[in-house]
Length: 321
Image 1 (cartoon, rainbow, N blue to C red):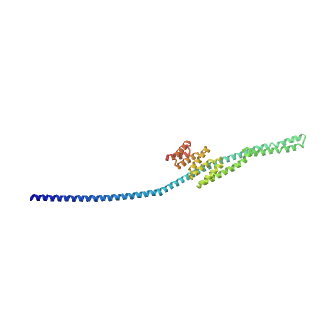
Image 2 (cartoon, helix red, strand yellow):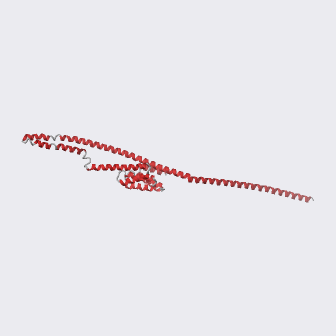
Image 3 (cartoon, rainbow, N blue to C red):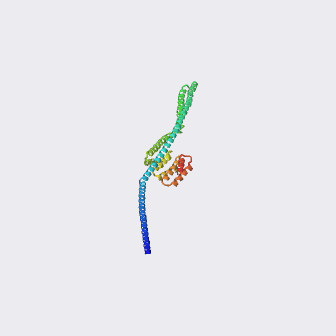
């Protein structure tokens, strides 16, 4: 009996141990499942937050692309247009200042030449007056002839001989004053139309330049093109050709600007506007999306005209790139 009791107690103890073991295992299993559920819930929340952030970032990117970038691009274009306009105005003012200084020098030279002509005319008139005094000496000889044999003849002879000497000085004085400088009577007649043509050229050029200053680039292009066709040999023709290309650049006709500036370089290779024309060609090539050609034009400008202001601007652009 004792053995059976001992076996029973052992079995009961084993059963109780097994029950406790299963209970603990179940509790541990339940704890793992809750932890897994919580982890899954946390992962889901993190995933949702990530999706929300991605959606917001995508919305912001679309807004920047549709609105912000467009506005920035428009502002950049406006700044470029303002810069080109200011650059053109600066070049216009520089040119006008140079022309004003040149006109002042020409006016001074003209006044000096006129004063010299007046002084030379006065000297010539003063020099021609003494020969007119000896001419009356002819009548002094006539009395000698009258004392000879024929008293009535000397008076007619003296009267006939007296008028020519005064007439000669009167004609000689104007010839010395006005005749020699022109060379002949024809040049003065030709000089008047030339002055009128020069005035017409200046008016046509100023009208086109005023249109450019006012920002009416289309009308300025027509004005400068007409001027170049009408006055191809005018001293203002190279400048008109340059401003034609500059007006085309301002109106964003970059290919037309390149063509016009190349025509300037070909037709007027000795013009002072050639370096500026090369600079404008480089700017047009850059705006057309050809930076290689633009850099090549800038380098050509620096190599050919290193001491010019346009070459300095080209160096600044190359250093900026």
